[in-house]
Length: 111
Image (cartoon, rainbow, N blue to C red; front, side, top):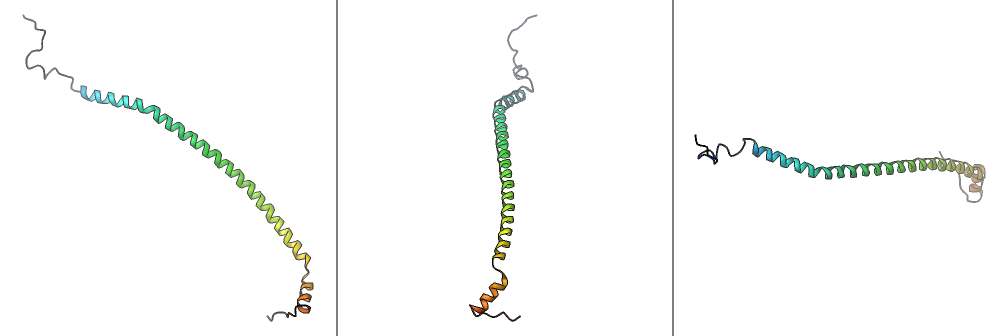
């Protein structure tokens, strides 16, 4: 029996590669791409988290300012009501009517 260390003729096509070798190489290449992409995805996720925290902090600050302005508005409404009452008390209606009739010559409206 004779042993040959070369490839027998016609066997090149049969023994060239495993059937799924090409698909495995493609899958392995995708794994590398995922490994290279992972840090960028993590960095983008971290940036979004920081942006969300900053937006929440600003929202809380605006909410607190809104509460302060609501209190100030209520205080100003109370002061306006007080000043309106004070203004109405400064000029009694009877004196205003007497001035209008006597000095200005006005008459009451018919109605």
